[in-house]
Length: 152
Image (cartoon, rainbow, N blue to C red; front, side):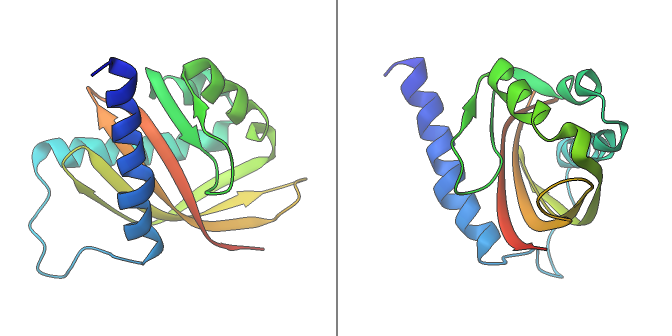
């Protein structure tokens, strides 16, 4: 099996499995185990990443990504594959982002899922309510997929 196939397999899992869970509204149960130290670190990384968007500074945002990262802005959009492609995709909206408001976050191993509302100015939408699914490796975001719950 080649490296590309392994990466595509992982990304396929994220898109189909974790994305379906996010869209179905599956959240941690009240009796869920406390996050491990690694999960807490992954949650902190994603929360800091979401906070960085209010700076509108591309370099400040891109430090969170691994070299082999990928990003799907919405479930209907093409995958930006590779750090340069992710940077180009983010550049298309960065100046319109006011802030990300994280409503809820949980982690399971290297996966972090957050529900958030993204606020925009001078953009085709004012707010986007959705779920972000992140795969973290070695303190960097490898995959980031967003799934829409509501746009206004």
